[in-house]
Length: 257
Image (cartoon, rainbow, N blue to C red; front, top):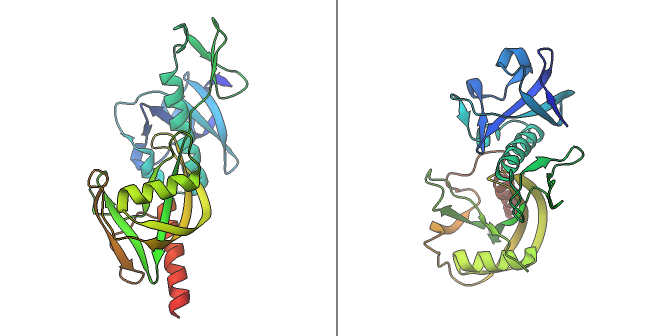
């Protein structure tokens, strides 16, 4: 429910515009609204954190606008709420007009949706399912440097689910397309909301089955098998990719003991 912020309102403030997040001093604003020049703005209550409200404010600030990735090292629950805010802000911004009849839409008062008062069409935030998989071969794990990561980080393989696919089929296809190998003994591990921009990462572990590594140069800069005790630069803590790598390392250590 949208409300106008008063001076006494306090909590966590997700101030977002065009998939960016306001991060004064590099942190999420926390405290009374008056301390952040938010009084009089429209806000949407999107959750609770540590007993205080989490508010979404759709507004652009001229300074200190950054990526939600900058708060990924904070508690997973707070990162998830920040990601929810960024995704909702982008949803409301991109659905001002109905895609069927072109008329102006307005937010629902009862759920996260946009409503058309002309044709009565209802739109919900879209979530793109994707897979991420750690592949083990003996005491080694397959790690790759992606073309979209120019920071030297090596990570596991990932990709989006296509229309008509199961998640298991997505794993097999993405692994084959990106690395040229096949996998077996696929096992679900966990999932993670991933607001870049609106994904749900579904994490798996798998074992190598067959094939030699042949990378897709459109997707990967490099890929190889790395022994568990001699790994390259890895993704930051808090990511599901890092968890998959650490879980695989733990399995390798246990079998090598």
